Each structure stands twice: as structure tokens, then as C-alpha cells.
Amino acid sequence: MDAIAHALADPGTRSWYLIGCLALLALPMAALAIWFHRGIKQSSGGRALMRRQRGARTWARGSLADAAYNAGDGVSIMQDIRAGRYGQHAKAMMTRVYWITGAWVLLNTIAFGILIWADEINRVVE
Image (cartoon, rainbow, N blue to C red; front, side, top):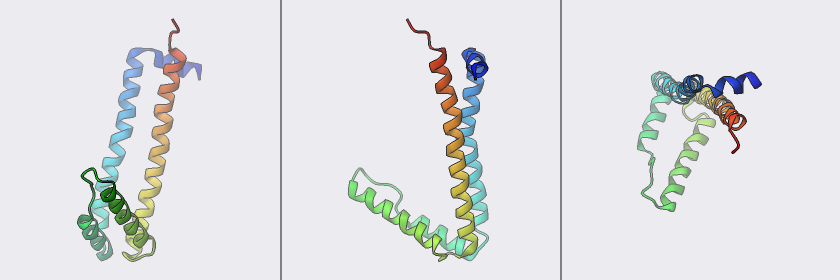
């Protein structure tokens, strides 16, 4: 672990590590979005799901009531997917999306956590 902290003390190594972290932050979600939108259209249930998502309100203009309504709409869509209303293909794809997103959050936590930890180890106390 000391070798990692020592390596990240070098500004060049730290910059490349940070670039890698930022790539980990953005690229997997972009790839997941492309994969999802291409794959979900393969079934009639998936197409119905996308029509419903397009019709759902996805933002609020600062009103807490609007935000609650939007969250309720999202929860309703998730419950319908879980119940199989959009078919097994859409349900399987969404399950994959949930697992991939969970792994992505975990990997980002580890990657940025290492960076924060190394910064604390390498901080010069004055």
C-alpha cells in the first residue's frame, strides 16, 4: 500500500491515475447506455417500456411536489418491469443494468477512495 501512496505522490502518475478515474466515471455509463438502447428495442415489451419512459416526466422546476411525482413515476416503471409487464427480455436487461451500475459504483468508490487515501498519506503537515 505504501508503494501506491508513494507512486501517487508523483504529479505525473497522479495525473494519469486521475485521467483513468475520470474515464472509469464516464466511459462505462456511455457504453451501457448505447448497449441498453440498442438491445431494448429488440422486443415489443422493450419498445413499450421506452415509449413509457419518453412520456414520463424526468425533471422538476424546483418544486418538491414535482420531484416527488417524478420519483413516483420512476418507481412505478421499476415495479412494472419487476412484475414482467414489459416481458422477460426487458426484465433481464434491466437486471443486468442494475448489476453493472452497482459494480460501476463500487469500482468508482474504490478508485477515487485510493486517490483520496493517497492524498491524505502524502499530505505535508505544516
